[in-house]
Image (cartoon, rainbow, N blue to C red; front, top):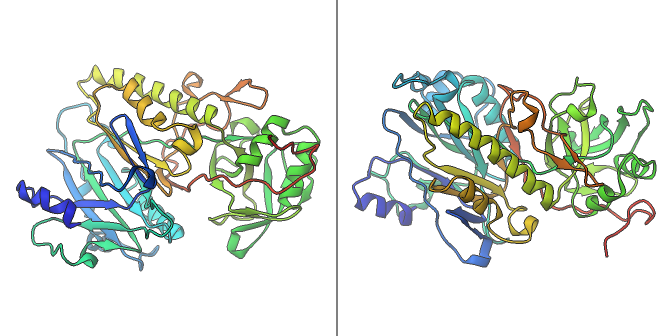
Amino acid sequence: MGLVARPLSQRGWTDLPVVGMSVGGNVCEDKEYEGADNGAGISITLLYVPGSTVMPFRVPDDMNESWRPDDWTAAGLRPDGFTPIKLTPPYTPKDDAVIFLFGHPESPIFTKKVLEGLDFAFARAKKVGAVAGTALENHEASIFMLPKIAGANLNVEESACFDTGVVGLAISGNIAVDAVVAQGSRPIGPNFEVMETDMNGTVITRLRDISTGSMTEGAPTTLFDMAGFAGMIDQKDVQSAVNYIGLGVSVTPLEEDIDKHQYIVRPITELQKDGPIFLPDPVRVGQVVRYHVRDNENAEAELSSLRARWKLERASRALDGMFPAGCLVFSDQARGKRLFGSAGVEAQGFAKDFPGTPLGGAFVDGAIGQLPNFGGDRNLEPLFKDGTGTPKRVGVVFDQIDRGSYLHGPLLSHPLPPFPSSILPRPP
C-alpha cells in the first residue's frame, strides 16, 4: 500500500480513497500481463468523477441478513449518498450509481451474501467487481482499502490489507456504467433437475432428465454418459467436455424452451465415474441445471458480439453528448493465453473496437456482475457454434433487467474421467 499511496500523496492527492486486490496478472492498453511469466507489477486505475458522491467501504465478516441502514453506514455506505444528483440530462435511475467491490477467494459464500444484501439495500446501483487472484501458488490473496491517504500509517500492513470480508467503492451521481459478464460457455445436452445433494449442496449425487420427457434419474456422470450414447450430445461436444466441462444453473427455471434458458455457469471441481459431481458453490434440490463446455472460438465470438452491442450503444449515447471515459476488464485466470492460445486477445479486441478509450483491469479468481441484457433483440445476442459448427443463439437470450448480480467463479479446465472410447473419444 505504501508503494501505491506515496506517489499519490506526493502529488497532493491525499483525500483519495484507494481500493483494490491482489491479482494473477494485469490488463492495460492493448496488452495483457499474465501471472508470473511477465514479472511482478502494480496496475493503478485513477477515476475522476466530479459532481459525484464517492464512498469507500468494507463489509466485515459479521454482516448478516438483518443489517439495517445504520449498519451499512458504519461500513461506509451512506444510504443518503445514493440520492440522485441531477446534472445535465439524460440520466435515468439506472445510470446514477455503481458499486465496485472486491472479495476474497477464501469466502465466496460470504461474498454472495454481501451481493444479495447490496441488491436489497441499493437495488438501483449496478454492482461490478472481482475476487482477488494470485500470480503464484505460494502467494496469498489479499484485498485492501484506505478511506483516504491522509493520516494513514502506511508502515502497518494490517491497517489497509485484509484476508477476509469484502471491500469496495460506491459512486453515485454523474456516472453511467454498462457492466456485463461474458461467460464464454455454451450449453450441451438436456436440462436436468437436481434431485439429491450432499455436503450442504456442493455435491450433486442425483439428477433427473426433464428435457426429453423420459424423466430418467441417476448419478450425474452416468446421465451424461447416457446422453452422449443416445446422441443428445454431439460427439464433438463430448470431446470438448474432455478439456472443459462446467455446470450451468438456470436463472429462468420456468422456461419451457430448452434453448431459451439463461444460466450461471459454475466450474466443476471434481467428478467421479458413474457418480457425483463436486461444485465450489452450493445448489438446491429442484434447481434446473445443464452441462456447459467452453472453447476459444466461441469465447472469442461471444466477446465480439458483446463489443458490437456496446458500439451501438456508444453511437446512440454520443448523440446525447455522452462518451466512454474508460473500461475495466476482469478476466478469470483460466482465460487469456490458457484459453485463446495467445496473449492479448481480449485487450486487443477492445482497443480495436474502441480506439483511444483507456483500458485497465486484471486476471482474477472470479468476476462479479450481471448477465447480458439484450432487450429482446435477437440481432444483438451472441452466436455460439455447436459441435457441428452450426451457429445457434442459445444460453443468453432473455432480458436480464433487475434480475440481480452474480458471483461468477473461475471457469477452470476440469477433464472428465475416462469413459468408453465409443462415447467419449479422446483427442490425439
